[in-house]
Length: 274
Image (cartoon, rainbow, N blue to C red; front, top):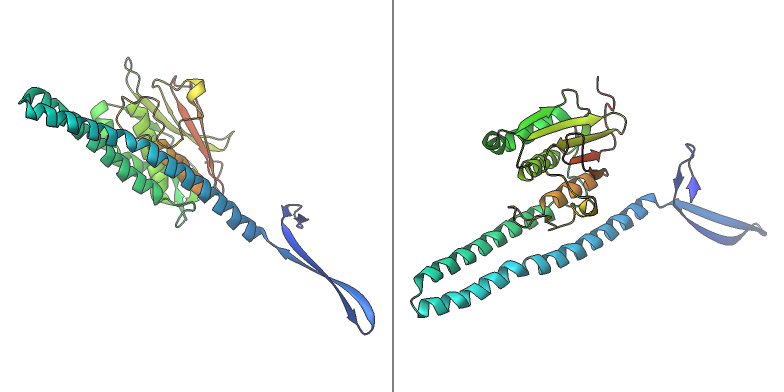
């Protein structure tokens, strides 16, 4: 490691060679800043780890609906052979449900795989504009469930990719609605914590038990298999935050009594909203 004028460290590669010049011995040292190379190596390692997880998840989670389709196809054939139409209809419903599940998985996997590990473009954008875009995307769900959503009016401006960041809020709001508490109206707060320099989405839903809080961002990890979805939503959120070199974490129970998901993004253009 070497040290810059601002006291920050950076990796270097040094080559030393002995030469003779005008009959006098010299030692020549060439020092090269390899920060960029280390960055590429880190990205490659991250890509390798993600590909391994991706491959495992595909082989594991796509197998379940395939087994269902295969099994009930055989049962369907038997029921049709005996003219048992009632059970045959039930078999078809199960096959159709498994096929629909696989369609959702494949669609969201394709979307997840296209995210990459770095944002395609970044631009200074008011986070409130990004949130407004996200709210338009979930307007139908909000109207259907009568969810009450509060948005801080002075969220900081970020230097990022607006469309994926809107998807972050879209998925988090969708998750809050999906895992709402059965005994109270849905409340969701989208805000900014100036002490932690982080954005957050807080809700009054069912919450997440402590032992599951580190698992919610894993690919295909559904805490409640009975709920619709594929388990890719929060994995997608984490990947988008990762591409922006940020951090994301869960707190539950939260101030509203449910789940609070906070995320930090670097390079904010105004960290203290006015």
